[in-house]
Length: 126
Image (tube, rainbow, N blue to C red; front, side, top):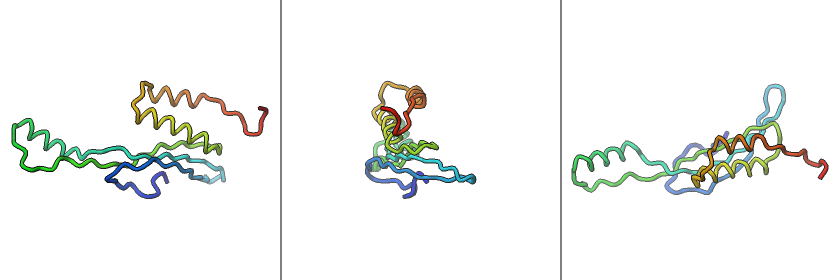
């Protein structure tokens, strides 16, 4: 459900996308799955290792094409019984930013802090 378009590689980086899927279990309980999908650079490691091996052995480049960079889809998914898509979008966006920008914050600490936040019920006292 987090890759409705399939797990296809792309020649160019695509913009992140966000969507929500609602799953209903056998007891008719709803589970809201917020998905943030982004594309990350991947390199064909087999071709890269062959090129590196030739460089180490001192062989000349024989017109070999360097390994192509492609982009693979990855998804961050947050599953909840609560329907707060905008809050979940912000949480996933924050995790994505810390990961992509390699910020000096451990993802484990960030996620623990996000999980410990209390969200007031909508329509409650202001």
